[in-house]
Length: 431
Image 1 (cartoon, helix red, strand yellow):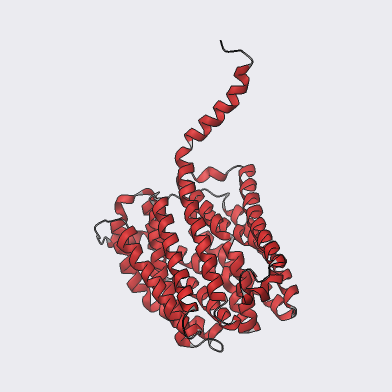
Image 2 (cartoon, rainbow, N blue to C red):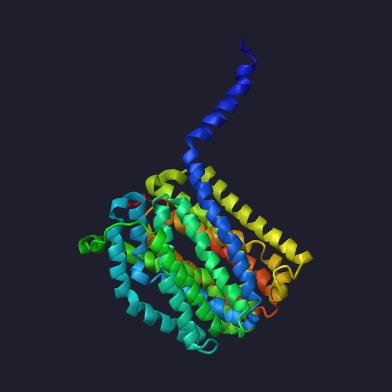
């Protein structure tokens, strides 16, 4: 016979079991997605170690900065129509073939603008430090080879096929790591030769992505559908360019003001900071999908502050752990990275603040507030340019320069918080 005293003890366990059972699908999807982030993190670290210790610090700085510019410029491709493709995969998957045809059409039409913008960026930031051929090769690899791979990832995530997306992410990152290892054993080491290895690795990823992972649907052109969503896509494209401008503008300024060697040291530090964002982006992606279906998900202050606190804590702990390892074992990631190892811990708050700015930008995208998002990111890019220019021209000591980045990113986060949550007081727009 069941004792009455047993019932209160079993009820909490029953509630926990019921809670987990109701969210079994969500937990399965999250662990499928995070497995891709974990695999990508491992291969990204291997890729970084191989490349950073094969190229000279100056040439690594040139490549990392040109790659950052390429990522920013790749958002021009198809005038941002990738956002419409993602929303379609998430909400109306039967139209993926139609919107893929639109992406291909708009992608071809966007090529002259992409080329013109790339040349303009080269003249402003790279003309005195990076050969045009190297810059063009890296932008080609980022914008026309890697960006379509991201499209395949985005579509699979939109469809809820997180396991397939995770596998593709791991394979694509592993191919980049393999390219870096092969380059390490190549007879000659220069940023020009590496750019060809980089093109080869990204081209192989593209073939795998569309040969094996992209959903099979008939391509059908429906221009009237694309025109209806083109304005929103252009807002997204502008916002994405501005987002990556404010995210990567520091690298461009360091190269332009401090030269290739300082840019290389800075790129090593920021690459390690970037690695902390990989698991956070998985969480943000799944939250964005839920907000597309339930825009009022973050209406409570406790939920908003709890999520932001978690993002900051995980990011900071990740860099603190890395900083401790490099303090005791400075050569753990190679001889070139060892030069920047003492500086890593000085940027302790940068990953958390940087990841929070990225997370807040995704909230506005999820709510359909794309124009506001673009305006906010434009303001943040301008503020970052002013702050970093001041820091780079007044602080000549590298450790103090890295330490001052904590203040720069704190000010950017506070500005982003004010802009984002002010905008979220307005009703979400239908997707």
